[in-house]
Length: 113
Image (cartoon, rainbow, N blue to C red; front, side, top):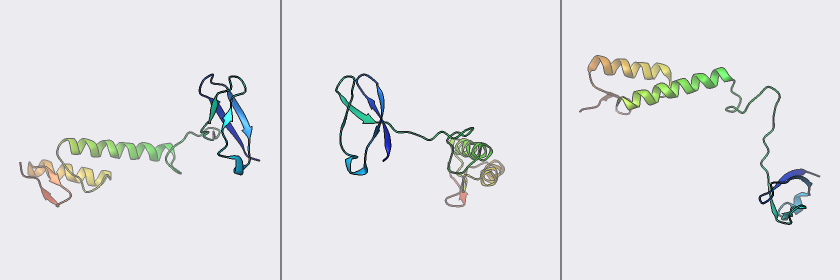
């Protein structure tokens, strides 16, 4: 039978309760203060691992975050890269600097001031 953690919102007591799937919607009452308990959301803790994007390691996640930071920086400058990929961001910034106008990846042209 599955076991679930429940927490009393009043006295903060935590209890592990076994219940069948058919009783899943049944309310649980705190044995300490007789108030209703809510089911706690548990996240599995894997040794040495922390929640990241699905199947990503820390290096890939840092690269992704770096690309997004570069993209948002370009957008703040008025440049619209084609994608969030570093090569597209760099190309859009280079084209903008050469032309003296902001590149627009949606129209594949330059924005008029």
